[in-house]
Length: 428
Image: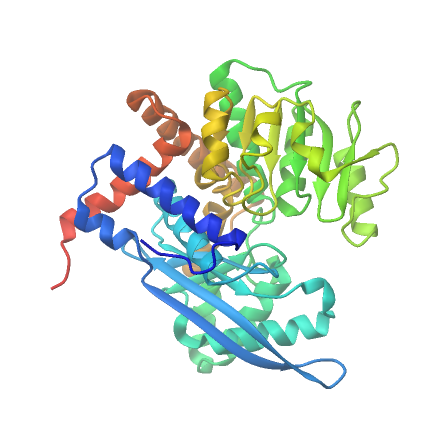
């Protein structure tokens, strides 16, 4: 097992969480101990320190990470995030979750994750471009369209991916550059991106909620939902839920928490946040709320779509929702999950719930690789079909084994690796 050195670090709690989730599922299927040993550890861990000149002429040294967990099913795949909490243990945990996510989705990918330890709000756009390009150069041939394919994550976006693409391609011979377009996904449309990739993760979260509601014979109309994180995932999830007649009654972001029992207009709030440097605080017709009280707000559906370890043993007993849909990676810690199970609160696990993003990335990767361009309608139709198949598979496995959705999802993912290693063997 991967062990942590500094036990007070929250992100190491995430690593402990994913290892516990893995081991619990491995125990349920009596996983071959030799295969367990392989899956418990990462394949490669890269830590790079690189200097960047700031706008004022001073040089600052940054630390970047890329952890590659497993590639027995295909190239490593996973996002890059820019956040002060990024460290080696965070990257390990998130890389492992990506492995299970891609395996569950049935994609020909493995899992990876990484990023830079920084607060992007403290840097200009020009500085962020130089930081990104220097990081890409430092990663060198450790990424590649058939080796390891980064994507956007927390505080990174299509522009970030465009900088990575351009930097990576500039290191290749001119004749080879056009064949490297799929080194990253989540690119701008004009730089080889795919229609629908911007909303793929949020659309996927919405779809799993919709499928759960259909399974439970619960109409979404007039259902109250709360969202933690109003970035790309939180916004698009809310956008599609509102179209179904559900009501957004509370939002929390890095700046604060707002509520309105009668409902918050998703589109108006999104426009307001764009005009106010991403902050939802002060939105008209809203009431501020203490951040600590967010998860106790009366609602039917709770959507954590920010960072990991947000639902804990302290706030899990206060949750009033009947469903938690994990838009973020690892938002529920193991101790909280035990409480939620005892309270019969369903959890759609992250490796299923937010997998629309990596499925959308796969579609973009395929289009670049094959020289194709799909319409938005085609992308969303394919995404919905894939998400429904995955949800049904998890639901059926949960019912067959009398386990929760997370255990079922992990079992499906791990069984795929068990089959691969059993059939292929281990070299030499």
